[in-house]
Amino acid sequence: MTELEVNGHRRSVSAAPDTPLLYVLRNDLGLVGSRFGCGTGQCGACFVIVEDKAVPSCDTPLWSVSGKKIVTVEGLAKGSELHPVQQALLDEQAAQCGFCISGIAIAAVALLQNNSRPSESEVRTALDRNLCRCGAHNRVVRAVLSAAKKIQR
Image (cartoon, rainbow, N blue to C red; front, side):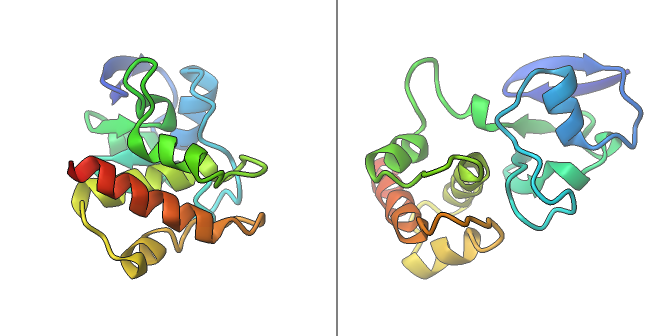
């Protein structure tokens, strides 16, 4: 059994230690917000926050996150109140198909946890690993900058 702390809750899973975290989140814990994109940690669709850093869960083995704090997109909201990044993404209409947006939200939240006043360039750099084919990048950047202002208040 591996002990995890996911979205503030202690969870025990019986998956093999080399099982990708993404599979455990989706298949064992029912947290399907993180998506399988490339399977090699290159696209950002599967990002989760591990100890305040956005990491690709598709190539993160279960053993490496044992006992660490993990936050998925499902854990960003506080009850019915969306995280400021989630609300800003909605306000800016920054999601189209929705496939990549959970990973983008995670990357943005991780950025803002470590840098509450990012420049536009820093936002673009932080989101560089998140691939999106919809062409909503400028709206996403505006949303993250808007969320940063709300968090600073």
